[in-house]
Image (cartoon, rainbow over all chains, first blue to last red; front, side, top):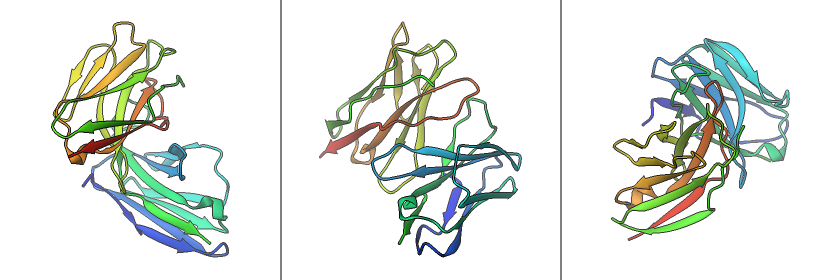
Length: 114
Length: 109
């Protein structure tokens, strides 16, 4: 148990659906991250939030829309996804952004787009 | 970001030490060496990190070469629970974690 929870753990959606992934951290951290892990590819950083402000957006398509309403919660809103977006989506948090802080990861949401 | 090279896979026997190598010949003076591991069906977890000196914690030891061009993660007594993908990552003082493909460690009973 890392102190970072993600829901749902598994999600199947069609290409026309809209869904949201939720991440919550109980560690009092100021920075939160979304990563994507596709089959046989390394983890890719998607978004970074520091104190609820987006500080990085790594060329992610607009069909992925993050939201950070407060420092404990992070959402990833999904719409009109493609089958190649099927992957494990991981959320992480750290005490601060841009310092050599340990990142704590949630268990991930396994997404399948049909 | 500087690149790391790790073997794709390694095998170990339970209760024996494991030495996981990592080459990083283009490391710069401000790069920290981080290790994370990812157990099956879980997110990555922090293992250890260091800059120049060897480091020990309850999970593992990190041995850093004097020229810093390579490092070795040491698990002193492998258990079945240590079977995972181990990532060696170079991280700038103000940088993000950039994951590679890692080393898949298998532990045999």
